[in-house]
Length: 291
Length: 340
Image: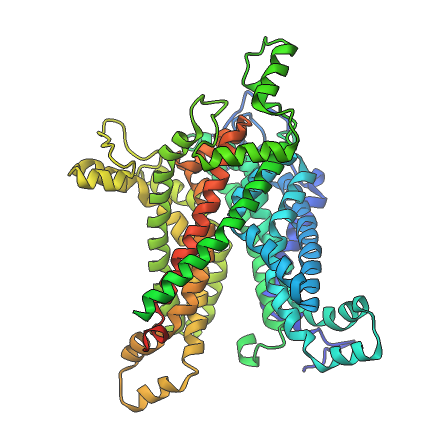
C-alpha cells in the first residue's frame, strides 16, 4: 500500500473510483438540499400565471428569470428541482436506516437462533415477497395517509425484507465460526454475542445494502409522488414534477427531462457507491474482482 | 415419467403453501384498509343522507361488527366469487378486474419476453468481453442501466419515440377507429383468431414502448446474474474437457456453459418477473394503458376499498402463479431429473 505524503494512507474503500464518484454525486445533492433557499433562483411554490410553461433559457422564448423554464402553474422548474432534493434525500436516508434496522434485527435473530424463530421470520418474509413492492407501498399509503413521515414508514415496512433475506444467510455462515462458539462458551449473552461477534462480520454487507436501498427509496418516493400519494402538493418533489410535465408533454418536453435526470443522477450516485463498497468491503471477493 | 411426478409433486406442494400465504395476505390487506379514516357507508350514499341513514347503511354493510367478523364475512363471499361492488364505478369488482386483467397480463408476458431476450444477449456479451477493457465499460453501463427503473424508462422512451420522433403511439391500447374484437379480452389473441390483422398490428404498435420500458428495466439484473453464473460454470472441469476435445469456443459456450448457467438465472427470474408484474402499474399509468394498474390508481384516488382489496389480492395471486410457473420450468429444464 502506498504511503500518503503526510499522515495516514486512505482506507482501501476510499481509493475506489466508484466510491469516490458516488460520494461526489451524493455530496452535490446534499449541498443542494441543505442550501436550497440560497441556491434556488425563485420560490419553488410561487406561481407566475403570466409565464406558464416557458422553455429553458437557451431555447427560443426562454426567460433568464427561469433558467430551466416553468411548469403548468408558472413555477420555476430549477427551483423545484433543487428543493425536490430535500424530500428525496430525507426519504433516502431515514427510510434506508429504518429498513436496515428492522431488517437487520430480524435477520440476526433468525440466523442466530435458527429453529422455529427462523421458520417464522422466513414465512413472514415470504408473505411480504408475494406482494409486488409498488403495490404494497401504494396500499400502505392508502392506509397511512399522505405525508413525508408516512412515506418513510411505508418504505420501511416494504423494504425491510431486502435486508432480512440477504443478511440472514450471512449470519448463518458467521454463527458457525469458531470465535462465535468461543464467545458462547465464555458465557457471553446472546445479545452480546450478536452485537460483538456477529455484527462486525455482517457490517460490510449491511453498509453496501444500505447504499443501494437509498437509491431504491428515492425511486419509490418518486413513484408515490407521481401518483399523488406522497408529500402534499405544497412541497416540491421530483415525482410531482414528472406528473405535471406528463400532462403538458407536447408544450414543454424539457420539464420532463429535468426531473428524470435528477432521479437518475441521485440513484446512480447511490448505486455506484454501493457497487464500489461491495467490491472493496466484501472479504470473499478475490483481488481481481475488486479492481 | 419421473420428471412429471416431480413436477406434479412440486405443483401440489406450492399450491398448498400458496393458500395460507394468500389467506394471510388478504387478512393483511383487510386490516391495512380498515385503518383508513374514510367511511365506506357514507361514501356509498348521496351527500345529503341523514345520520340515521348512514348508520343504517353501516349496519347493512356490517361495519359495526368486530373486525374479525367483518373479515370472516368478506372471506366467505370471496370463496363464492364475490369480492364486493365498487363504490365509485357502481359495478362488481370481479367484472372490473376481469375486464382489465387480460390487458395487464398481455403487457407483462410480452415484457418478460423482451427482458429475457435482452438479458440473455447482454449477459452473453458481458461474459464474452470478460477480462478485456470493454468489460470495465460494460460493467459501468450495467450500473447505469440499473439506475433507471421502468418508471423512468417509460417516460424516456415516450419522450423520444412518441414526442420527438412521433413514430410510435403512446396512449391506450388501440388508436381510435379500430374495431375491437371481444372473445377472451386478450386483445392480441382475439384479433389474431378473428383474423383482424389491422387491429393486431395497431395493438402491437401500442405495446412496443411499454413492453420495451419494462423489459429493458429488468434486463440488467438478468445480465449480471447470467454473467456470474457463466463465470461459475466455466470454473468446472467439463469446460476444460470440452476444450481438450477440440470443440470451438462458441460451441462450448452454447452447449456447455449456457446450458449449466441458465438454471441459476432462471431461479432469480421468478422473483424478478413477480416484481415486473407490479411494475406494470406505473407503465400503465404513464401510457394510459387500460389495465389493472390504472384501475388500482383510480380506486386509490377515490378511496374505493373493494377494488383496492380485490386488485391487491389479484396482484398477489399473479406473483405466486409466476413463481410457481418459473419453478416448474426450472424442474423441466434441470437435466438431473431426467436420469432414471
